Length: 506
Ligand SMILES: Nc1ncnc2c1ncn2[C@@H]1O[C@H](COP(=O)(O)OP(=O)(O)OP(=O)(O)O)[C@@H](O)[C@H]1O
Ligand SMILES: [Mg+2]
Ligand SMILES: [Zn+2]
Image (cartoon, rainbow, N blue to C red; front, side, top):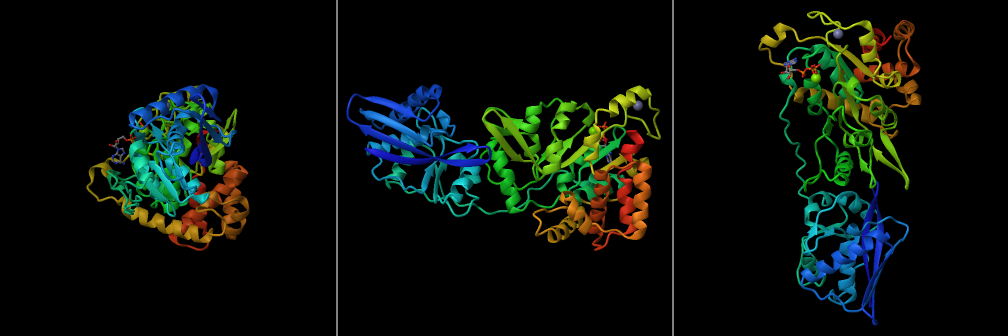
């Protein structure tokens, strides 16, 4: 008897259909699998045999041939054990009816017949739904994430035994429905806890409004880390599509913990000892790195000069294109990596250069060496640079109520809506993504601003990229105010956020 079972394997973030064909025939009992790498066949056979026996089914005493097609798609034993077991039970008529060809089965099978959760269930279900599959049989542990997808029935199962009963229609399993409570989880931190520091808050608000990268430079204890951690509280809510993108990445990284969609914008703060692989992504079965885990959210690099140059250079491609390519022997993978970079640093090794209240004890040589860790090209890609001064004593002591995250978020959300509307036919959402062509069209400035820009260009020795970034930041400042035209004061403020690289990195 011949049976056919469909399953899915992942390649990067995309799932591919795999067909498991099982043939039982007379002759000496034998069990062979075609289409798996040699090393994993033996183990896979043992696992399938144990799981079937331990589920109290008879393992057929016949000649069993399993073919996995297409052969050129890389598969691993543990990914295909479950469909192989179902294929054998189907060919031996323990599963009585053929399995619908628009149904696919994913999950890992343990020796006792339990079906355990897998990484990447969500991207698999999305890909297979797009290939017109109508039913996904998934491990119970993966049901929350999968059920967010419309147009396909999600059948959660816990064991091989339960699955066989379901396929034999002895036991009905209701398709799992997404409980659509799109509520934002509350944050435990808030902007209102940050006393004073109006200049830093203003710069961060502009950065968040236009999704600009930002560098905070200042003396120890001035609140840089504090404000960075609170940026997700002022960013607009994730849209459903964005939420799916983020959840897919966390799904294949195994970071979902049986939960459903991720509603919160990610905040990632990798330590400066992080490796290149953990930052960029990679491994034999490529997993997304920090730059992708921060997709649609914030990548915070605290004490950025402590990061090795080789790790920081990884950021250049994603900062430009919003994605990262990882080359492997078997081809290259691309993962999304559109994040808002927030970097923090002191101005010198002792931390107090430029601080009005402390003496800096560093030599010029030490300072130069410290600053040189941030390369020109990286600095050039940072739209907003701010110098953070120590908190004023009066600000710390007074009980003045500071603005809450909710109030700031309202302004930012409004500015984002203006940008979305303006760029709706361009496939981008924020000013930071505006390509050079768009700058000429949407960032026109008046005569007075032109003169201001010319002076700044000469005085600060700006690059063409820096010049464009000033215009984009000015656009965001105008959007925050709801102004259609960019005014001179918007340009002047934007120029001010570009002056640090000249002051410190000469
Ligand atoms: N503006 C502020 N309002 C209230 N508390 C503040 C403020 N700035 C700093 N603090 C307090 O000081 C602590 C240290 O601040 P934070 O860690 O953000 O400083 P930092 O600028 O990152 O310093 P470093 O350069 O040493 O990393 C905070 O946890 C907070 O308790
Ligand atoms: Mg800090
Ligand atoms: Zn110093």
